[in-house]
Length: 360
Ligand code: ADP
Ligand code: MG
Image (cartoon, rainbow, N blue to C red):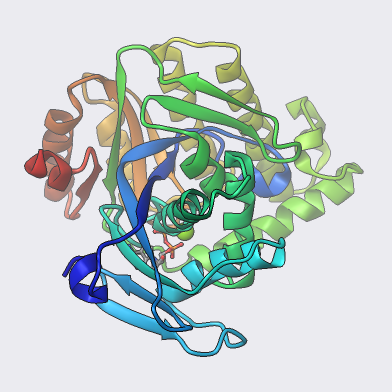
């Protein structure tokens, strides 16, 4: 069903926004640190039209689900909360938003850590900006999107996902200082492309593990007398902490330093080494990896054509990201997934998208 079939008339406007993957800078955002995400080829498209009654109507092609907002004082749940949140944060900022018909379709896998939620929010806000000529820039779009996710979808997220979706593209990586929002858009390393493979391991312990790591980092920062671990640049300083705080802090400080090294300009080979070092640090110091992810990352790291690989996202399952020689991602994925299967696991390629290439 397209917009016309659902709402009985064509849309007035549409906009798209991509999902994202974080290349370096993991578990640094809540320490006020540095991240390095890039956009992925999969994106979400939002089409808008004016509603002929006084209610908002949202339809998701992916879910084949329609939600009508009959009472704007009552926030919806599920996918509608993200769209309703975007409308409401704009209203609260003083923009008048009419009743809308909203149609969503997406090629970003949902709930796989590629940030389909940010893609949905940023696409919605871009479409609204276009429809209503709103004077908001791309950074404000990211900020409104984050507010929508926190206050309406109920997810305590940082700003990385929304900034990446709003400011990065598939040819560029976004360096972001999560404390100051200072940023720089940089080209992808030379002769390289991104490969994302899902480990097939659900992120079951992710929430409790994540909260525990956050608390440990706060405690480490307190012990060291700084506002956040981002304020420590010399890793020696972390040596005086008791375990496990010493290793947790060491991950954050070395990870921040790895991102800052990329900012100085590095080759693809060096970028890959930094990704490998990031994985070792996430595995040994931060302890957020699991054996299948370690196996997947090791298989990637020893495959010719791979500059470097690591787990991406919060860990405890989820996906790996690798920087590989341009044009070789698919063949590398086939080779690695076969060996991963022999090790007893079932992975799946997420980027480059098989679906998008079939459609092309
Ligand atoms: P991620 O952002 O990593 O994909 P999240 O749990 O943060 O995972 O966001 C996934 C949620 O976002 C989905 O459960 C759904 O509510 C919403 N969502 C994202 N894309 C769509 C879409 N195309 N149609 C409907 N809902 C979507
Ligand atoms: Mg999300």
